[in-house]
Length: 461
Image (cartoon, rainbow, N blue to C red):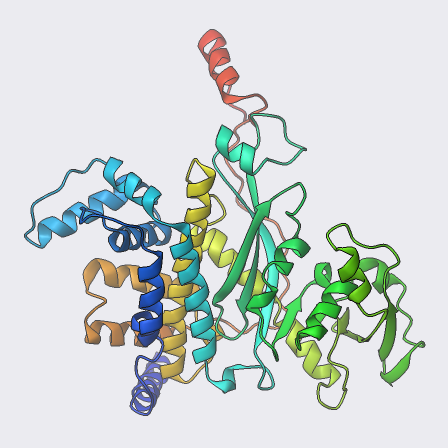
């Protein structure tokens, strides 16, 4: 216990010492920067002075995304209590006005804030957080489910493997995430099935988010010829796991050898033009492309980083291990925040809710980046859930606007470090058995009619 107390005291002393030598609130200054305020003002709709103006509505919407109880009723109740405690006239606890205010909130305003906060956090990060001095961007996709309404099914249909009335509308999301800070830089949304909803198409729509000198890190789904060509044309390097068909035919005896299971090879342009690509774009793509293939950590990687002296095999192996962070980021978004199951019953509101979750994620990442800067550590060493819990506690018992409260919050965030367990392997299985309810195999309306007629089925043991 004494040893642990000494470690905590040492961390606090280093925190205060480092805070005195840097801009104490470098990341929070981004929220009040003139550029961001101008972006918000330009996206605000015309509005009267109501009980729920756009900025207050967005604040409450964010609180919903971070709260365990995401209902509009809970948000309005919380707002009403705060007004009463401030000596203001109590307002109605009906949710109608707040729901209409959320509908008036422009989705462009929220998505702009996500992109601006993400890029600002990344740009503000010190060079020591980067990989070999270069910013690394993670890319990955996932799906989120929506309430089973006719409107949602029309815009984002469910999987074909599910019967009508038994599935949920699915939206595919592809995000670009900063490796060093964990901030979401951009996201693209599409249908789970149908033209234009695949991960490659969604990524192509976000390539302008990447800048010259960036490194794009992804899994085997992105190791395609035309994406590698486009990245190279833009001055961006890519590091991906080689996709299955190419991986099975890899022969390190061919090409120019760079070392053990490490070589340069020349890829030929596919003879078939992809449906999404115009004939002009196809003809402008180079007929041949030189890439580097190597085997590291049991995986075959393909990359445009061709020089083994500048980027050794061991460095690329370590870099690709960092790709797992995007899986953890998706888990934080879907499980910790609740993005995996949206609540809004119309496509427009569901998309807006999704962007609000991404904005909430970036704001927590901003807290973590600020705390890491003051504690002289990496943001990835801090716990996202721990930071979220502390922020919610501060909102409940203190005031985030007070400097002392904010300083103490950052100190507490830095106290909890994520365990460094390289090579950890866990089975993808759960020990606790769920409650034994039978699966719903018919539309809920039909099931209710059967219950009225015959009563509930016997409990399955």
